[in-house]
Amino acid sequence: MAADPATPETASSPEQSRRPSPRDLDVLSRQLGRPVRDVVEIPARCVCGNPLVAATSPRLSNGTPFPTTFYLTHPVITAAVSRLEAGGLMNEMNDRLGADPALAADYRAAHEAYLASRVEIGARSGIGAVPEIDGISAGGMPTRVKCLHVLVGHSLAAGPGVNPLGDEAIAAIGEWWTTDRCYCGGAWDTGGETPSQDLSRHGPQGLPEIVGRPAPVRKARAEDPGHAPAAGTEPAGTEPAGTDPDGAGQ
Image (cartoon, rainbow, N blue to C red):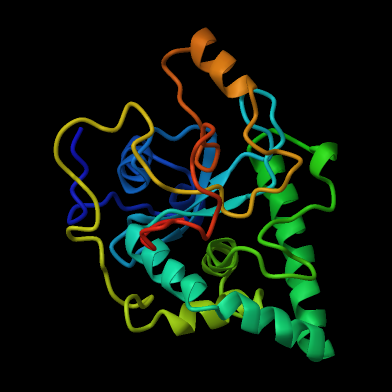
């Protein structure tokens, strides 16, 4: 099915807006250039209705714990954030975290909010608690900035005022993307078949060592060939977050 960015589905309630439709999953696969799995909510949408961020189950269907709850998917935003990373913004933010106790406290609060959101999403999706990642958020929180894509995804999902550095990064990409306009036209391929294998160059958006690139993914494919890796679980060989040599992805 070709997903036309000009004709997104509409939802009549916040619950329906969060729930991923078949069309949402098709759009996500096209945005990322690979099939998606274990997406349980769409916590942020473009003004046109297309997904900006995917919320991934805290435990994947192959049993792997997955701490990166909010995964930034829109190609225009991911490319813009990659420009910020390439320009050294993370280093500047880390310096400020070390020098500004108030900012550090707000950033730690963002970490706690991220954990609370994961618990809520796990409860709504029926997954429940995942003790292996208890206390682990993503993106370097609560003390460092390691992946701006994670922080921007969190800010878009949670709204302004929750993650101060994510909010700053969103403001900093205003030259390329803003919340009040649709940038979907031409941002991804809407023709042909939905991707059936990983054709992307996206990295794991701050995925910590506890997850890495789990071997069970290949086994899961063999057992259930109709499913593919979740957003954010790439096979070995993809570049780490923030190291895309083309500067146009995560």
